[in-house]
Image 1 (cartoon, rainbow, N blue to C red):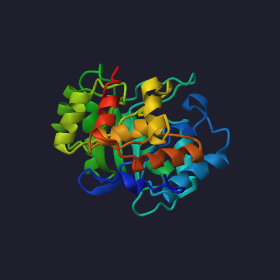
Image 2 (image 1 turned 180 degrees about the horizontal axis):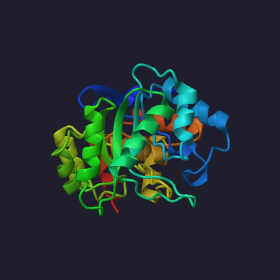
Image 3 (image 1 turned 120 degrees about the vertical axis):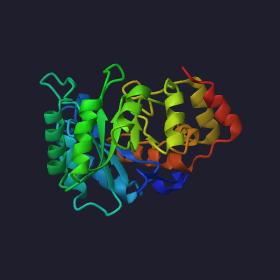
Image 4 (image 1 turned 90 degrees about the vertical axis):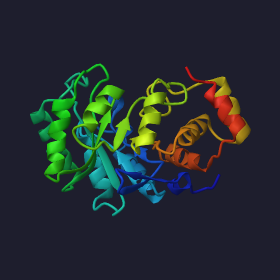
Amino acid sequence: MTSKPSAGTAGDFLLGGDLPVRRIGYGAMQLAGPGVFGPPADTGEAIAVLRRAVELGVNHIDTADFYGPYVVNELIREALHPYPEDLVLVTKVGARRDAEGGWPFALAPDDLRTAVHENLRRLGVDRLDLVNLRVGDDHGSIAEPFAALAELREQGLIRHLGISNMNAGQLAEARGIAPVACVQNHYNLVHRADDALLDACSAAGIAFVPFFPLGGFTPLHDERLGAVATRLGATPMQVALAWLLARSPSILVIPGTSSRGHLDENVAAGELRLDPGTLAELDAMAG
């Protein structure tokens, strides 16, 4: 693999039909402190990671005002503002942080309106490129909170809407209210409960953005994955990302890291091309 990888090697996707993004992006959650709470141990390195991501051609950064809380959005603004013209900032609303570091829902319309305005202020923008409504697949109807975001979209404060941590019924409900450009759900090489939902999103031209693409707080580990990586001269995490990119052209990966070295490795995964036999080996790892 090249010494300076490029996010462009994985190809592009037209997010919401009008925002071209590279299929390898960056998830900024790990820039906060332990438990996604408080400031990073090394603010300088966090800023350097964000700048390195843009240098490598990443133009899709995923964030949320409740990361920290507030810390990550403030780091993004410090590192990158004024933003490159092609940079797409995607944020989430629908949760808040409590004093113990928990993630309680904040789905009331007033909560959502406040969250959107706080994201706008901390990121230093007049309009948010895409806002994901963070819900839960057991939450039931999302009509009221999604309609509140759709109203803010009509006001010009949001360009596109998405949903995070949801089910097929909630997606259908949301699409009856306003266009959905993005779905963010738990999905990776081992965790594939949303195979059918992913295929439905792909057919509808909706981006599918897996969270925990590398396993999240419990990183992926499998001897078969390690064997494939050794054979390809890559790391297991690079192979896991390459599998996601091969799984569907609608998948956008946003692996997170607080290290420039790991960032380079993640972006370099876009250079990997998996042959049919290797894909079959990896497909057999479904949990």
